[in-house]
View 1 (cartoon, rainbow, N blue to C red):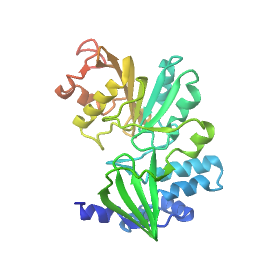
View 2: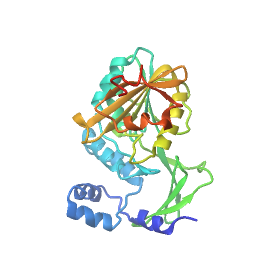
View 3: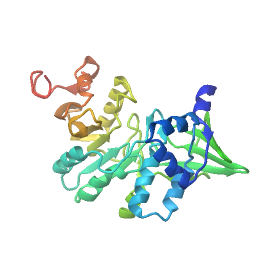
View 4: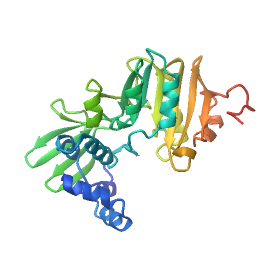
Length: 307
């Protein structure tokens, strides 16, 4: 049975209007108004994304509004955070290491805007965007619309002026469901062949193994436990070529330059910490016994990377 309290908290009045959306997003920046809007449980349905896509705003403004709106949606326990150029240190390191013909996979891209730097600059490498959710599916009924999430089969219902999160899950996705893509319109305009590929970092399998995998703000201790992060790393290891690298990056004001990342290199079926920049929060956990069956220390325990 669905949790009634969670259903109530996740449901609320809904007005999929661009004017109201702009007011709402601006209001979230003002503490008093933010508290009121959150108390009212104001919601937006996935329809708002299509309204942004079709609106007459200049493309750069449209792209920014699309990304800000994406942060209002969740995928499981994680909010779909996204922004352009949010990992410049990591992107620079990836571009420096990437070789012609390499496959670079970015996970958890949300709307894909965070991958623009790689898409625009990895000229001789292939860049693939993945996320656990590439779109919302929907079906119309007499007085509203039923939405389905691809990643967990969750069901929500949009009624006139109300958005209802049922807490129920579908047995399967509807074969006749129509799609609302989560790909940012600016990414689509620049790279019309690009799509977001459904991929779950915990259990998914890529069509072919990657040379480089980028995890930006995905393996986050605010969202997942160390055990869950280990599960994700183990699965990513299986999707990586031998000698391939996983770049785990996080943006946070607590880090120098607002960004920290580490690089895990695959060798003989295990991982080695190859690079660490600005003290990523996972570093301390990687040194614990939990990860010893997955990760080797670089060189020896007294190395600069593994004190």
